[in-house]
Image (cartoon, rainbow, N blue to C red; front, side, top):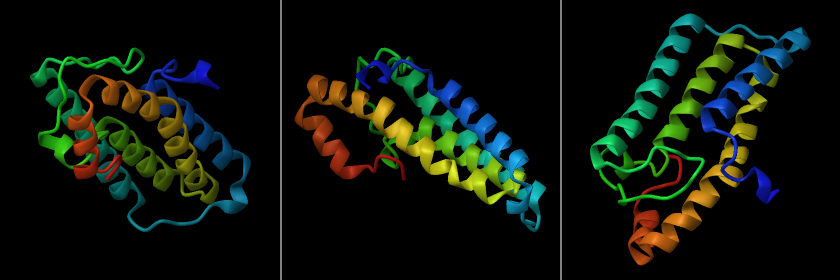
Length: 152
């Protein structure tokens, strides 16, 4: 399974998960339910997820460190801004957008796909990044892990 670590771009993982959620919701209409204000909730969550992820990107750009998650390395440890709240705001943003998509689909099985996204990103993206950051920044990164949660 090491061959999957940091090999698939997280936006591609998010898109694949969105497609899987759509496919299972179409294949299992009996699991559909009504969500009040579905469209508004979808817009709010997708927008919030986009802003969360974008704030992570902007903060990385401001710190002049890498945005490429396929080659985990870093020129500096970013612990301010949105990174004071979440160590992974870009992945959190993706999860929030997928939650909005699940609400739009209004199918129980679509919601069951959300933990799959978290498990995949934790195992194949975040864990390798954390190993690299620990080797680069040592105790400073360990202290940061104690202050900021992995997701939220």
